[in-house]
Image (cartoon, rainbow, N blue to C red; front, top):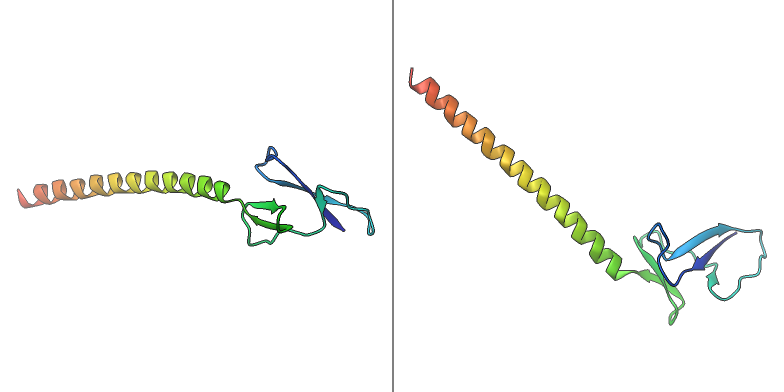
Length: 99
């Protein structure tokens, strides 16, 4: 059976939980749960008031911001390459037409 230690601060892996495999019938104390986080949650965090796993919105925002920065850099790089290609094609056309 799997149990989950609920963390008050993120661990080194950036998670709010630690998963352990224990024998069936193992007593579960406060600060632990047998409720598995949904696989649909990218950054599960335990919500004490509802006793459920919820999405850590701050982690989602941070992740999306980092993804956006990377995509913006990739777009700029692709745009720069396209501009260089366009310039090279125009230079080639000028060379062909000037003959």
